[in-house]
Length: 424
Image (tube, rainbow, N blue to C red):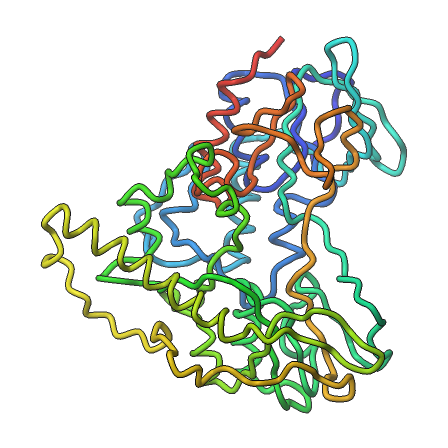
């Protein structure tokens, strides 16, 4: 394990996930004196915030960090398991001798006299470090807080946040999953296909989340979006900035080449859909009545993606070269709302386990630098560059482009940030 070897560095990187490792590789290539500080362990979010059966949601060719290449034995269309990707990141650190210090938590960052002063907890004690420049690469989903509602849940209801969920053996009886993003729908699918203790009803509290077909016209949808240039759409060119706030679409990497997950496919497995969880009452959960709107939104989002591909192929004259031969039952629309229930309340005694697939965000309260955070405590930045000279961000959704928030965009963004640096 690496140790802190000095008090001052040209660059200090906060976070030892894929973003922090990518910028570290590039800094090392330029012989820039730096260190990566990770509060837990290398690839911590992959180790501690993923379940046992999780697979990456992007195919192998999209998951390369700087200096990485696919080997002859790698199927570029396949999806790594979580364990495989953790091993990939750990080997990346060791093979490139990256200066990652684990179990070193940054508790405060100040700036004065053109230097950043950092306070860290390392080996059980507080330690002071300084740097000319700092890169925050700790991610936007690094911390979890259980949502607070009007009334506490009944004490007999087991609560699990999605980062603590590992496998179906943790749940029992009637299960309510709150959140229909990628994690929520994938866990709902796993529970529906398993036999967990006292298995009964599975409820999914939904919201406005897009879905994507996994494959279309012979290619993974992510490959099409890359080919047509959608993944390179720049944040500063968005006509509607709210687009950058959208949840990642429902889809799964489980299976050799992944598969489509939809509210329809989950309904076929027996999952009962309800609207968005609004609050809790003395003895019940209360949901809104917008479930049908959410179904329409998901269906239309899938159709828009396919129309985008069709429009591109029509323009290039290649439509006939890519026939739509994939039969994807999970991608069928639901104009009759067969998968919509009319439930707007569930009594506490109808639920044995709640899985919170919402509530993840990042805390940046360790940045004690005036003006760098907005009123919500989130970084003020443009293309990863802070309003504070010498402070940078990396690995955040839509930081520079659409692809910035996934592994696919990390290498390019890391190069952009490294090029912006003025190492003293």
